[in-house]
Length: 621
Image 1 (cartoon, rainbow, N blue to C red):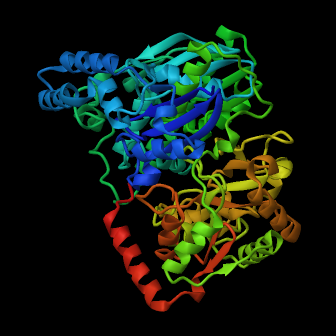
Image 2 (cartoon, one colour):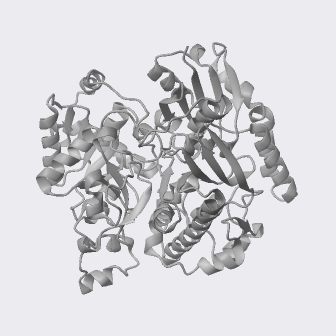
Image 3 (cartoon, rainbow, N blue to C red):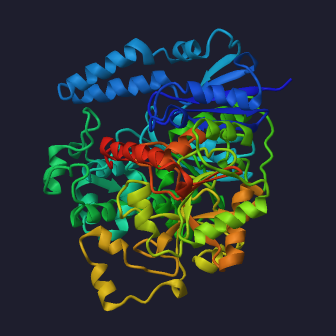
């Protein structure tokens, strides 16, 4: 009889569900993709329904349900933390206490109520950072590894060092709230005018434009960093321990001003703040990893937690750190907790054998729903859209390649949806990386976002070393490491280009072509790489191969299929709405090609109005 374990992460941010059957990952999804509410924290009802449907089972067939953290310990931490600051933040304390005392404290009953009476299995809690650790180690290709989890906070732990071997993990050391690398980075995210829990990517992308002139100030006043990567923060500069904001007036005085208001001009100050906190973060991550290597003696490292999505720090760790091999959970944030909890129960608590796969057991993180051609055709007909059905894959790839070389921007919707924050070639917007105008067009006319934000390349696995300073056959299918572009591919800057590179207007800086693939070359000649191989990526690999055969360029631009304020598209309906409301030229839904130029003009006019309303509705943060 099969054992089904349903993992659930919910009630903070990025809620999700994961289903594991006899140790195999069957399905995983984030609730935001179904609800269309970014970082949705609510019970992942639609995600659970999807996971069960993917396996062809009912909730009554599920043997175990596991929740990704211990709600009682988290409540204890909240109470102790708030009491330390009273009478400051009394209203925030009383509001939080009411929310917990009325619903969250009895998490088991709440979740069982959501699942319904048909569930007759057993219910388990795990711990937040144990779930992170399990999500990193158990799907990895390693028989043994050091484990680092770097996060904002779970129950009490904010970071942990562990060791995994076979089917067991041990947490060796942990750092506790309120001292937290994730919270420190989020404080600068907030102060720089971006939204906490989503704007951290923007701060990381902004960092190369600035100079780390505040780094010493941060280390002198805000945080003491120790050789083992642990840290002690001066909480008088922060407000998150007892209030609803991240930083205190003392923080604002130190950096000579109030937090930047969202959507106001980004100045040199924000650029330098971003560069400074990024440098400090890299120092902490490198020290923590070095200590982990010393403590465990392993040549392998696995990472999870929100900070593990800082791909710039990951790239430095890979190049300069002591580990030979590094594997990072693609859904490293709280969304990955559902998977970690399920795997922890299967291996550690139930004692089942584990046999790591050569690549990993994450299946390319393509673990979400897929849609058939017949489902797509019915939808297209109901929307009165003009389309072409291309049965022959070779002809389809030729058409798409031709559009790419003609600098068209294409919505690419294929196979199973990605699990985690990155689009990996199944829910992607793609373009020609050689285009000088592609980055700005995609940012401003497609994504409706800031012009400075970089785009990632998808590159054929066998050619990655020809374009980037990485080892031959480097494997990064999850877009989690940054590498530098090879020097011979970089452009020689004219005197005017050099002047433009110093301009305070980021749009001018971005417009300077820095390489033969300018659309994916960041201001510091770096790129966040996704390697693409046929086993994991199928048709997407064959598209890149066709593009390479025709152009000699083995990479294209790959950005997430969404616009600002919205999650990545989940189903064909989401993809069509996004396509019509933006300046995308073509949408490819499995075997269907929908060209913008062939659509009814009144339909496009209506969709464009909807797009403009959306831009006005959602702030850039």
